[in-house]
Length: 136
Image (cartoon, rainbow, N blue to C red; front, side, top):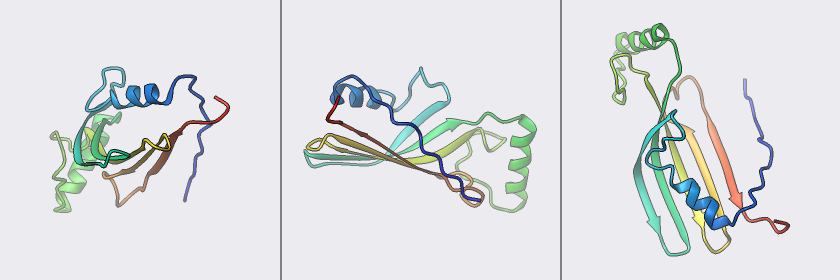
C-alpha cells in the first residue's frame, strides 16, 4: 500500500538566509531535537552558487525493548547481521540519508531524504523545498 502525505505550506516571515542559517545549525546534533541523535557528512561540493551536502543521519527509535530485541534476533538468525547497529538490540537508531542542495542564486534549498534502515520492508522518500515567495 502506498501512502502520500503533503504537508501544509508554511510561510516564515524572516529573511531566507536567516531561515537557512537556523536550519543548518541543527547539524551534526541539536539539543532542541532530542530524537535527532547525529549525522555524518558523506559528501560535500560547493561551486560558489550551488552547495550540495549529503549526510547520513541517525534518529532515536521509540519502540518497546522486546520489539527491538525481536528484530535483532530475526536479523541475526537470518545471517544478515546489520553492520550499522549501535547497540546489542540492533535498532536503537534508524539511519536515513539526506541530500541538501542550496541554490544561492535562486534562493532555494531542496532537501531530499530517504531511509537506509529497513529498506527491505519500507521505503520512505521525503522532499522538502524552502524558497522565497514574492508576496512575503
